[in-house]
Image (cartoon, rainbow over all chains, first blue to last red; front, top):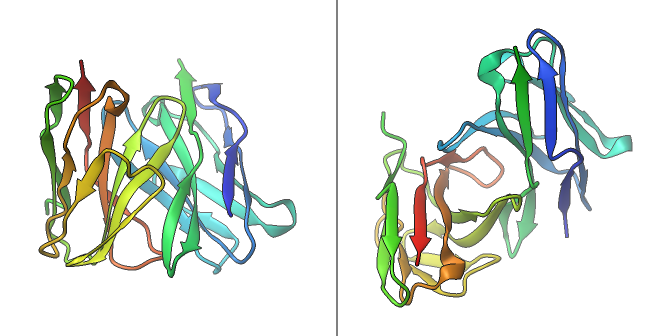
Length: 115
Length: 112
């Protein structure tokens, strides 16, 4: 079975500094990988997705992630954090189960942005 | 441009009561899902549907039931509410297996 590990439950950065949210996955075949963002008391919004095309994926709001098969990683980065980036971020892998694809969620990383 | 709509947004239930969480999508998506989100646990799949008339259990189906009579609607039923069902519930839909999901804004349920 596939799994997702988000290595940090909390990350704090200063406004204007880079963001790195780490995600490792285990997969028995070529996975689809996603990052979602959840602002307080809101639903989840898709930031970006990897589905076996380019390994560097650009998403919304200046975020990007790089798929590294050799490291089984899919870390999320942003060059310069903004106060509005404060939220919880989920790394997700898509798993084939009983003939259909299902999401496996990481436990989330809460990003705090300091003024 | 509604996307996925969930009602109600908040609800407090007493132990043993029943209720239905509503979910409607207007994107003509075949795939629909119900998740629950508990603190520090990510999201866990309760039930899913790959089309009208077809439903299947996810990772944590006990205590819940679903139906899918139309493409648009995917209600989640709690028959005998228990404190362990206190959670935030999210409905999601997708137009294909490997694509991204569209999530509703959630229903925060408290069972006392």
